Image 1 (cartoon, rainbow, N blue to C red):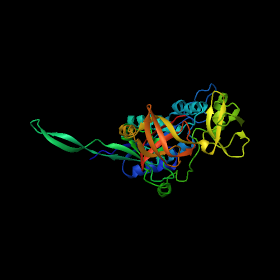
Image 2: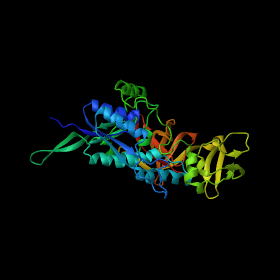
Image 3: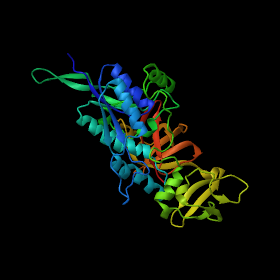
Image 4: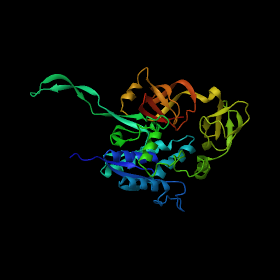
Amino acid sequence: MKEKKKIAVAMSGGVDSGVAAALLVEQGYEVVGVHLSLWKEGMEGDGGQTKGLQLPSSPSKAAKKTAEKLRIPFYVQDYAEDFKKIVVDYFLAEYAAGRTPNPCVVCNQFIKFGKLLDYARALGCQFLATGHYARIVAARPWRAREAVGDGGQTKGLQLQPSPPVYKLLKGVDESKDQSYFLWTLTQEKLVHILFPIGGLTKPKVRKIAQTQNLPVSDRQESFEICFIQDKDYRDFLKQHIPEAIKPGEVVNTKGQVIGKHFGLPLYTVGQRKGFEVQSAVPLYVVGKNLEKNQLVVGRGRESEKQKFAVGGVNWISGPSFAKATEGREGLKCEVRVRYQGPLLKAKLKVKSEKLKVILEEPVRGITPGQSAVFYVGDEVLGGGVIEG
């Protein structure tokens, strides 16, 4: 009898991960649920240190009830300390440095598909599944190899299948697609990852949860930053990096003082409000001068970019796409520069050891610190971090 595959499911307490677990149970896999206890605002002790595992939160209770409904083992992993150091501290440091960070990308790279994937493998699981709206497919390209006879003589070329190459694709539901946050995944990780709901729409996921009477079927989605409790992220910044929140001058692209701002970390490139200026036309943030504590704003075309650099690039299918950017013509693709942003036609080129993105048309809101993610059709080629 063939042994059933063992799969760990990251169960957040939401409907997506609950349905992911239910589908795998229905398909006959040996499933275990794992809920991550992560740092949230208010978990610091008197000395500023992160407290240990808290009493079960509402999401963990929902996750546990779902596991009980599905009759699968359920574990809670305390990653609060790691999450604070890796994700939250990065978030604060990036804002203090004048950039706009992407904490979900970092969490996926180092927590969910880093520490949790390692934990799942230690439990004896072949796979880690999550409720992400994305897909993974394995392609087995053919390649020519020399065929050798019994006597050692060469018998010519023979086509043989190569080891599979794992491709990351967008989720079927374009309105929920989360592939933008997954560009750091590698071949070594993709072979052990499953996205059971990536081929479904959100209404279909809700329907499955209701049909199976899962405890999470009516839970509402959260669109806020997960570690910030019931407040605007700007208030969080004011509380945790007050030394970086200093009022200063607003200048135009010629360096002329035209108004005031209330702290550089409170603004992001492309932003139109929150600063005080006297202007008859709309002005947008185009940059920051940290040395002078100045917010630089511009009008219309001044706020748009057609070329920008990307660092820390990861190519999901390996180095073949990197080589394609080294040619004279570069690599044609589409790029997304913010979550749920439009796909922009672009060309990628390597220049002075930096990846340069050249857009077909200039756009507003090319924001240092955010991710630039590259696509051809539904496939995610890879991505990197937008540089100033």
